[in-house]
Length: 240
Image 1 (cartoon, rainbow, N blue to C red):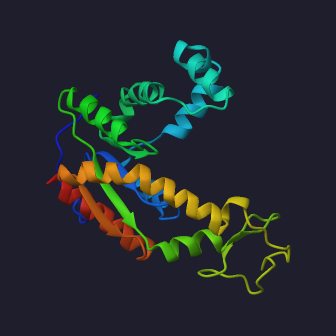
Image 2 (image 1 turned 135 degrees about the horizontal axis):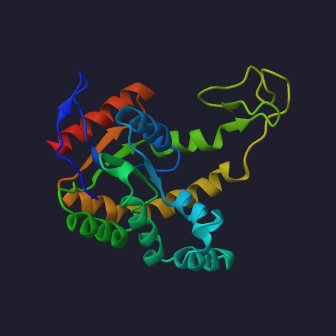
């Protein structure tokens, strides 16, 4: 997992090698949007544990490897994949050449033990940069509105939000007049439970990176472009 020296470049104070980046944020905070922008800006991959697990389970070659068989057995049984198996696939992914300049972490590390393992793993490699973490902050009220106000058209797949981007009529699609649908997990009850789980798991991870001076917060209620600039500025600052 060789990593080159960081240097600044470009009018936005960007880095040529940003290193490992962990984006944190509650459900609906906009992590996915910002991750895609950072990937394009720096030409680095996103490392998603969800994607890695699905690939390990379904890929005809990887699924028959010893690690793939273990993961498939656990997932087929409906159990949570234990840390040691998740860490094994993350380690395998980090050793691929497209990670040399850095990567955006998605869904990992989710817990304090995972963060400690990742730090130790990166520290053991030559010239490897540590993780920097940026948390996208959005108020509970706006997060709830983003989730509970979301509606989609079953026909054209257009997405609306009753609070931020409402249709001309509350219940039908502007394009084809189809009645809009709400996902079952976009209710306030489901959202509140997801928030509780997120807070319990993430608080120790935030404390871990904050204590080490590798943590920053940005205002996620700004326009998307301004959030992006704030995230980039935070990463540059943490890498300086």
